[in-house]
Length: 288
Image (cartoon, rainbow, N blue to C red; front, side, top):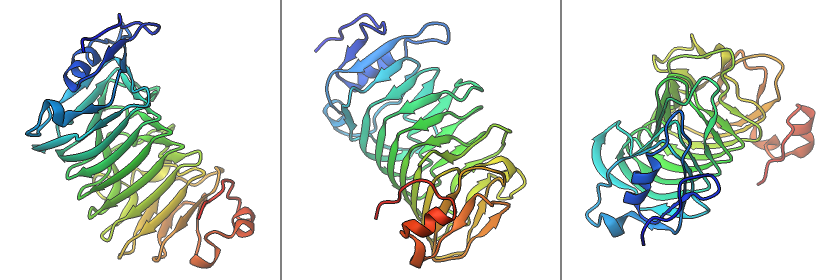
């Protein structure tokens, strides 16, 4: 099936293969917006039956239209991402059955306004490297879900990515969920009814910078979110104090919460106790 459409917002390019997505997904620029839509589900093994999918650059605005991209397979070792988003965006797409020895997503040239490059997306599979890496200002994931199993951290960036109304299920032997090396006064980490379920036996911290210290953690927010942590070790929550919406944390280990009067540790007895959660100012409903 050949590519149709003209690439405008009203008549987007319609692509049906990984190679077509790479071709039209890279046409956008900082000055010119190009729009692309998936015309069907894409099984990458149909094009690359031996695996090792080539990377693509997304500088256009890609609408998955509810379709799936599956079998994102790569044995290449390294941190050069398979999907490299620069100026563009991904929305309404399910990327599943990932199996990668390299970073899956990366962003660059997103801009200090931290606009959302990923909206209504689903990501699932195994990643042996970082799942997401950014240079410069990181971007936002809005209403996205993650079900990732790996051996490294979920993210690494200059500035921590912003998760808005996201569901994150992450299983890893890494010591940190998120890594970053800088902060700004407008930086936030998780907010607006985001849910994090992490199974990490060796975890040392939820939010620490890449050097493993808490020096830069004073402006990282966990706002109106749920943290459900399973680990075999003591760990630290590094985040900002201040008047923000309360988040709740469940863990078998009492964490050292650094200046985090907006994060309340909740024991097993009160974890799903609606009256108790309301009494400590937690404002979203927690499903069992």
